[in-house]
View 1 (tube, rainbow, N blue to C red):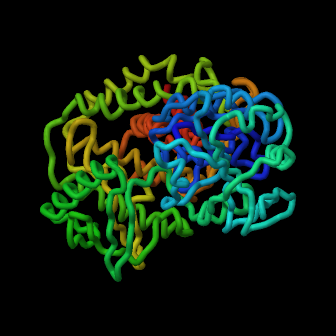
View 2 (cartoon, rainbow, N blue to C red):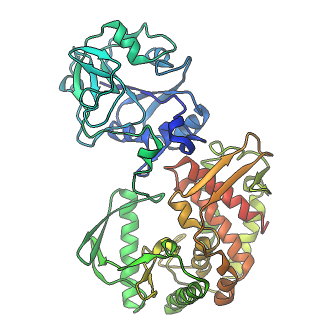
View 3 (spheres, rainbow, N blue to C red):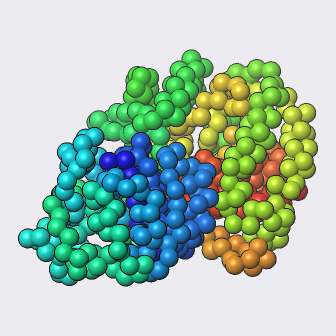
Length: 506
């Protein structure tokens, strides 16, 4: 079986704000769009995607991020029948295929019936039975009936030996109802453990995940064990371990206990992330003072010569490379100006020379590289029970330079949390409303870390140049776009936030 038809039409209205800007199939679950679970499970198959609602978003998103063979058809008609006739026209004669709903996430251990898994020509058609979640239709004793069931629920999973079995499907209507009238005989396959997200309440029961998890975390007593889960995670883990080893040699005090580095076994901090804490002004000022001293001691521990190539790479080349991948994906990214939260913002695509000139000034103003953390947002800073800070999750590189970099990058990352509320955005605690025109504009509301009142104290304590930090703050948002690829709204939100903050200093 080489072909999979995915019914990805429909508005997904029961998911409410999650599908305001994107089709249901692109809603992320555990940091991966629902549709991509099928791509990951069957990477060698050929996919025919039925698109309807926000179909242009689907087209541009898959063009940017899908790494499987696929075609998209624009659904004609309405209901779950919509687009099916068009989709099966792309399946070769006498070839078996799977027709599946896009919001089904199959369990890792699920296997196709043997006759479909092998190269043999299957002889039976199959319907998937939910077994562990309720469905509106059931299939029992070879009969479909509109009766809610879990054990025999019709889950939106069908295997056909060839397309002639459903070639008379209507353009509109309910597919299961139509099949019940055709008297098609199915064998059954159990889908126990499959996850299905039809309602917002079901989705919101998921644990909150950050934009880009690369690691598996486990706790054993007072030890936290951090293991990479993909190639990118392995690359980052190698750099993180090198950073911790260097920090120990330099006797940096604000570190967790490190017991092993392969895999990374470290002290489990009995404390909290700063963004989860609700402090009064004086407590925040004291914590900020401790954080500033911790980073200053890090920066003063060891220095090397400035690498201007790394500054160009980290601040400009990387940012523009990532932006180049999403210009056709983000609404109004080809407009010269976009209204964002009431501010008319110039588009960086049309002002990149101005941005590059400002970054050139950063090169001339850099007196040297220092040992830096590289990602000191609140998400990567813990507070012990006595409110003392702990530096975790270091980045370990800057541009082409390992371990050492521009200290302004550390300060801009801290500002990113204090003023930009990055940590709440990273947890997807934001709402994005995209107007019908660039002039109508964008409304983006990010929940607060409640540290904005510390902005003046931040500059007073660090002595940093406001324009430089604000410039880097906007660049960091713009650079987040493609990095946050699993969530379409995060891509768009990062871009709009970047333009919003960039406008202050252009």
